Length: 498
Image (cartoon, rainbow, N blue to C red; front, side, top):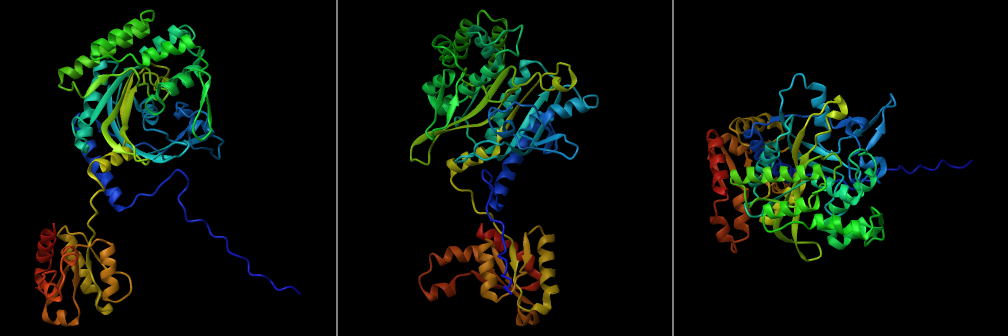
């Protein structure tokens, strides 16, 4: 009789899913600090906080992503037990439209809200491009005034500066989808009487223009025409425009002049046969005038190359671009690029209610903004760990826990060592935790009414400088203090270490 062979246990692979990443202590703390600075600006402008579900129905989200050729049109979707299709939100704006439509009888008009949280997109991952990322939004729903758009742009300037981006290191670039629609009319891709016709081709044109920074004019021309093959060999089908149509679109993209007035003048020439296009130009002029009046000239400009990839924008669109140079992975100098964007979406709520409800807002990509700040100021400072109360005698755990409680009550981050091992292992743990101070109380110290305080932060610095044993003995990295002065002396030691 054959012996039963022991079946090999199949264990799951301990690896992050493709396109996702994990965040550890210092990164989470850094993001939290940045969020606090940005949301304080939003709050100062009169916006209220809102949290929405991470999951929405596919019908409520709509299909507005640029990567429509991806599975499920670029969203992570599944069918629920009642056969309804659900999806992870791909941004924070589509859920806002649902919330406003659902609760508009209880909400003020205009409704001004900000929101923070992760979003998910089923995009092709790449270097620095993840399928989950954090956004920080602010929106005004219920106002059709260009002043609402100008206010969002001004607030974006203030938020970037509050987060640590210096004035002169960013630029808010502003355009208007109505102007682009006017260009679409001129080239024959948009019939105002039948707006649904040619929608797919217009989407390709929008996505092509949105890639100008990455692909350059020649790459955009290829996407406006037959299509383009990238370095990996992947082929992207183009919009199928002829040479004359392509040059008209490129004329729009390259319409920027030295002043906003001159740029708007050129745009008027391009869309003079389109009432919607001319309306868009007038809105740009109003926004520029309002920003100038508030002192934001030089920090924002009219730029026809900005279109934004999402399909729900209907009017002004804006993008925050960081203008300082970084060294990329190939060792080449380049500008960091966009960290925030937004625009006007006057039809999102109407999808639910059938009523015209204007809206406008902006979204800051927190992961990209944090990456930009690291490029500017270097790696974030290592997070200071907790004060460690070491365990010398296992039968005296209540004594050690009492020390921890006293420190925490005094506002000092602290923990008792919960692992097993000798003092060397405990101090190694403290080093890995970046603990500033270790507290030692054995039986002799207990009887004498004292504790030993080991200044780990200072000790680490001195260890790099001390050359002789005599110097080491003379350094003040470990002191003996009365037990009743524990909190006071720990606080002083932390202060000395900076």
